[in-house]
Image 1 (cartoon, rainbow, N blue to C red):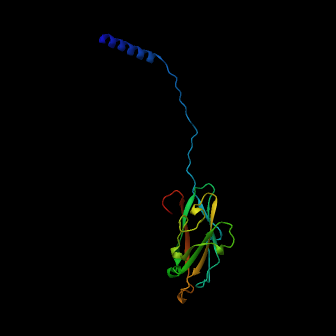
Image 2: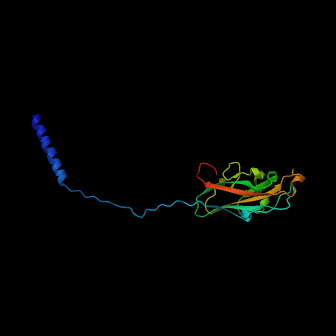
Image 3: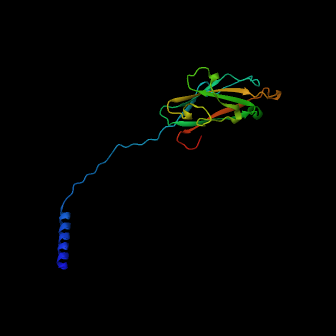
Amino acid sequence: MFRIFRGVLTILAVLGLSVGISHAFFSDNVVIAGNSFTGAEFNVEVRGAGANGVTLQDMAPGVWSAPVEYDVYNLIDSLSAKYHFTSGMTSGDADFYNKLNVRVRHTFAGTPDPGSWPVIYDGPMSSLSVLSNDPALTIVGGGKLDPNITHVFYFEFQVDPSADNSFQSKSAEVNFILNATQWENPVNP
């Protein structure tokens, strides 16, 4: 009996295979064309009165200059940014450079009277460090510079009040450096 049952199963299996093999199945293939990928742009500019450099002459110890505007602008098609302002002497007298002070103010664009804006840095130019996303600073939007947005800064300059007669007629050439990176970068610029 068991042999008959096994024989019937074998016959059914063979029939199943032959029926399965003899049937045709429909299939289809879809191609999705026209895919294109382009990297984003990242472009931050400095605009304003200070963007092309500033020349201050006849600076007296302890006297602040008039404010000079520096606008950090993120182009319309750029990624969101964070940035870091620093300075570096390029030529001149290093002792004089170390006696230069800078005061940086920042608030919303269009706010009148920049002299009343909060001071976010006040110290030696040689130590200038304004990091847009520093939680200790009060930079608009937590320092995030979105596309087509401008952050406005006013810099004021001074020869330190402790400068003595040996600093008369001294000079220093200085670069202000704005390093920027996209907002999502875990490393600050």
